[in-house]
Length: 172
Image 1 (cartoon, rainbow, N blue to C red):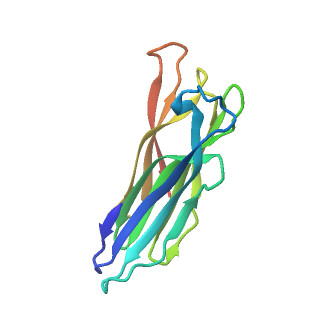
Image 2: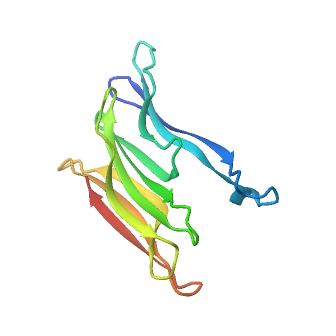
């Protein structure tokens, strides 16, 4: 996200990630099954009106962990930035199991609140389970100032074509 605020500060939210080959997978393993996250983080910087950049500030750090970012959305309002993303933990079990957390953070310049989980899902992609979908939005009410996250969750059906999706909402 790139945003110029009313005071002429340029705000930048960005993700840095690296991939690495999973050494436990045989050489003939398909590319998308053999590679995994080695680290992925969300950073924030700003440029002041005089052109000086702030040092990078890590908003969410997953370096060296099995957590990864599935989807993120950041929204500026007034002089703050509001952000949300799904964090996915691959528990690396057989069969595969996961934990998904919908995270929220807000702040600007040198004042950021810690990221907090507003929704959590444990799943193995079996029928009847809910899994996070890659769509969300963050917005603020211009009347009350309330911050809300709209997000999507899919419930897996027993057969192809029987999946259902729902929209959720969380106030922050």
